[in-house]
Length: 420
Image: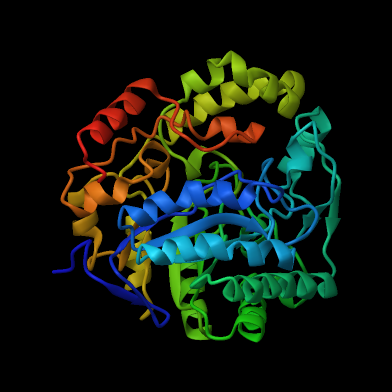
């Protein structure tokens, strides 16, 4: 039997237990105070005993590529060097920290956010649905299709960021391979209709692997791999589960050290944050100006779409577990499972049977020091998957729990010393 508090090795790095803080949007930015914000966001999880932390969605380019405001960029070597304060803080608590590298590609904030301009890098000509939403005014499409040389240069930027991260003390590299970022766009037949070597989307991940190895050596390297099973039924060109399993097998053979299989959509929707409609977040008068800035007069339409999707994507505990099981049967490297996991007993059941490590994301907004309770045998996280934490992030707001009774319960647990 494998338990949550058992150690595990990922790409040669020993992790003290099998609980990880999955990548989240820290919305810390890159300017003055960003490192302090990242330390305050991530160190509590390490202090609570979480074995592995992922710093979420850090953009590898100096311009463009951000999906929401205030994402952190890791293109500037001087800034990345300052992040040694963060890695040092995590290491002081015995934890390990990997940096998740990202680029939004077509899913850049200039596509949907009224307050931003900038390049939208596309794998191919955007699909008809995106063009239709642009035609009616919901999106602002201005895409530039990457040439073959530009694809190679983008992969090289991932590699350079990885090398700088290792110099700053990061223990590994995680690629943001889903959530409609550039990697998923290369993998997805909905977005990738190229006629060069990158028509095979896995080739882009292989190119990134080679660049990471050139700049960062044998640092552990893992990636999310999407199955587009949550796509709308009218989308015929999509990644099936079998496609995702095949891609995982190829990547493990090529040299990836671990894999995170996830079931997502072909579009940026609530399939990645399944749960309730965030009534409180949409009704918050303090946030509405940010919603209007983001979507203009369309913000109520976006809220209505959110309500409809919340009915479709209710929280299913461990919704990626089935895909993880399929991948685990085909690869020798560790498989990581996340997505709606909230209970300690569920973690223990998944370990060894579906995956080697179990992750949680939104629960760390509700309880930054959640690890202590779970590793000590606590029954479940406080998080209710209500998504009052996620919607405000489109305005650049920090990721934190905004549900009063959950906040009160955390305060009670703090007073009782449950996180000490």
